[in-house]
Amino acid sequence: MSKIVFADNNKRIGKVLFIVEGIKTEIKILHKIFTNIFDYQYEKLDRLDRYRPYNKKDNPLSSIFVINTEESNIKDIEDANGYLDNLFERLIDEYNFPVDKAAIFYIFDRDNYSNTNKTLISDLMNKLNNSRESNDEYDRQGLLLLSYPSIESFTASNYIKDTFSIEIEKGADLKKYLHERSIGYQKINKDTVALAVNEMDKAIKSIGIENYDLDNFRGANLEIYSYEEKYYAQTKKYKLLSLLCIALLDLGLIALEDE
Image (cartoon, rainbow, N blue to C red):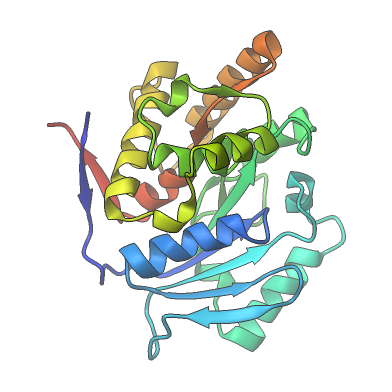
C-alpha cells in the first residue's frame, strides 16, 4: 500500500472547474472534499439554474466551481447546441470565473444503461486528456474521468477495502448495495479519502498499469476503459472503480509515495 500525503489546506491550485453528470451526489461529494478536507471557496450552478457559494473567501486565488451538462448524459460533453459554451460565458461574465484559465475535469458514469455510446466515450478520452491544456483535436482543455459503473464507486472505495473485487452491473444496483450497508458520502473525511486513493491506485495497477502520465492521461484512460468493457462483455458487470481521485493527484492535493 502506498503512503498518501496530503498537501496543505492553502496550497495554490488556481481555478478549477468540475463538469459533472449528476445534480446531487457528485456536487455533494466534491463539496465534502474541497470545503471539509481542504479549505477552498466552492460554488455550484446546477442544470436547474440554482447557484450557491460555499466557504466564501475574499478574492481567492484558488477556488472550485461545479456545473452540470445540459442533461445527465455523456453525449452532452460534445455540446452540440452550445449549452456549455453559453454557460462558460456566464461563468466568466456573471461569476468572474476564468474558464479559459481553469483546470477542467469531467466527472461521468460508465453505466451501460445511460451512457451507451462506446465510440463517443473513447473519442472523448482521446480529446480530453489534460485538465489545463487543449489539443489539436479539441479547442477546450479538460480531463474526462469515469466511474465504473457510477460515482458511488468512489463512495464505496472510501470505506470498503478491495473495492475492485466487487462486481456490479449498474449504478442503481450499486446505490442499493451501499444503502443496505449504511454507506454514504456524508461521512467522507481525510482518512476515508486516503483509502479511496489507495483503492484506485491498487485497481489501476491490477489492470497492469504501473505508471500513468497525469499530463496526458489518454493511454491509461483508454486501457482502463478497454479492460472494464471487456469484463462487462464477459460478465455483464463492472468492477467497481472511480477515477475521481485522479483529479486530486493532478491538482497536487494528494501524492502517492512508496513506503
